[in-house]
Image (cartoon, rainbow, N blue to C red; front, side, top):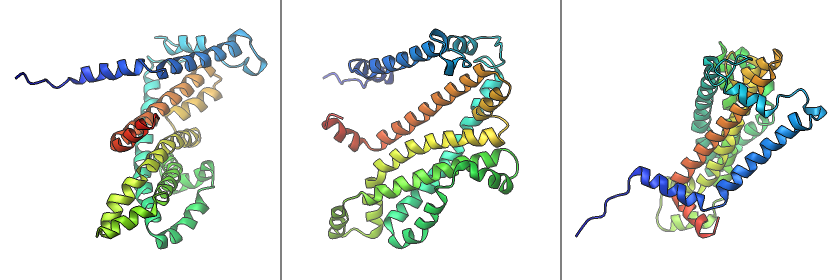
Length: 285
């Protein structure tokens, strides 16, 4: 009897790609991007609408982006461009890790313990509406250097989203699960680990997807004010120096890396919640 060999990773990847190509998703994605690029071209270069006459068109941006000797100083071949990406990505990684490490446990305990929620929720709701830019002077006064204030601001914005979505996830769990666990003799620790945490996971990862996006735009705002490197600093510096092509390149780079980080969080969530992925598949979603 001949044993069947396990498929290799490359075969699995090719199978998934072939399966994806049989769905309308990749073609709709290409159509959407093409539609956006077409509108961008018509507004800036085709029709030259008054609102867009100062903006560089897509052709000018792409040519500069791929130019080994860029006219405006920034392209894929510029070491400075990669430095800006590196600093922003490093700050996001640190800020997102801190916000997740604090926000998820905080939200779980707020949802699990009414007494703890009564103490902490008013403080959270008082601080949450304060805009990130309002925290900039305080961050500069509290922390030395240029790096820590930027990370603090991105962490703060991300923290509120993560905490509230986690709290909402715990509150969404049906009470019957708690009663069933108690009837089966589960301790409070068992209920927390096997009912509260799994039940809140869909909301947690939804919150983390939003959180990483919030971290990005908070980071950019902070880099514009107090940064020395990073995509936010690059956008602001390009605007001040009237190098609008570099500004658009930085904005598109920011959007691309924001999309990549959100997709990565979504992928991790799907890996950790295979049961939910299967349930949605059965529902045709």
